[in-house]
Image 1 (cartoon, rainbow, N blue to C red):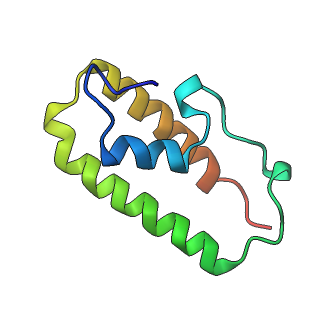
Image 2: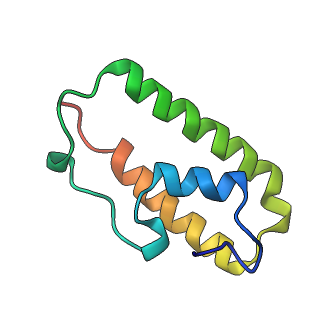
Length: 89
């Protein structure tokens, strides 16, 4: 199992893996067409709420980040930017 730094998995790590499948293997985000168009608004809101909780926890831990954490965080920020800056349909 992949850990952030040398520490055991935390709630934040588990949430990142849950929200970003494949992040442990360094996989890129899935293309939009690979998702079902039947995802409802409530499910999307639940995912965004979970992401907000994870971000809040990471903010509290930011003073303990090492360079590897910052590098992974920048990669995730890039992925999130790509997701949320794509044109609306």
